[in-house]
Image (cartoon, rainbow, N blue to C red; front, side, top):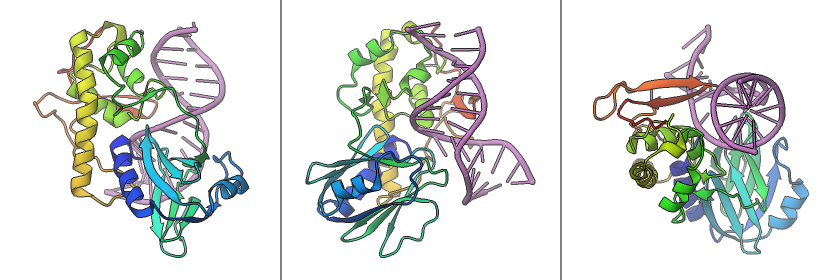
Length: 257
DNA sequence: ACGCGTGTTACTGT
DNA sequence: GACAGTAACACGCG
């Protein structure tokens, strides 16, 4: 369920809890989406000290002192739970037993997963300094719709359906705009909106739920919510649904064709 | 009760 | 090839 700002907070909190601790055991309970063999995971990770937990795109990364890197993706429904001795959570995909506490990854669909040594993806993280005007300008040299491009993880990593709507409203760009038609001013606005929307969301989440490591907080979203009928400036919020995914937008957003 | 909802991949269609 | 759209994954929640 979570998007980048949630994951950013989770990674900080997981880092506080587990960095410097030794992983005693890793157990895989659902192998459906896990390509690594359980014995390979054990061999590479068990007995090693966790150096840090970080986030890149929508992926969490557990770096160990021996250089091993474990990627974790929560997908739509992944949840993380701490446990003391025994994990009793339903739909557990994997369990990590650290010396101080256990961490369980659950997902009723079984789609959340972990990957040993995840490959470097080609997209740039949404909060990276490399995501500047020049990069966006180049990325937008195409005929696709802007929302499809900014949620394409091969272009920008970390922006999902909900925050894409928030960002495009903040930049006052219609999600249906054709990328190559977007003005330079609006590309600058888009760059700024990506940073401000995501960073502000992280701040809001930290303020209300400083210790959170799972779930999603989005009660501060301005546009992508069915709770609201109008934008902060009073424009009617419209919804466009396709394939079970909803795009929320208003006529305040300039449409480039 | 039943519609919703976040991500990714694989596939079809234009 | 470029781009859009949809199903599948199979539950809890209100």
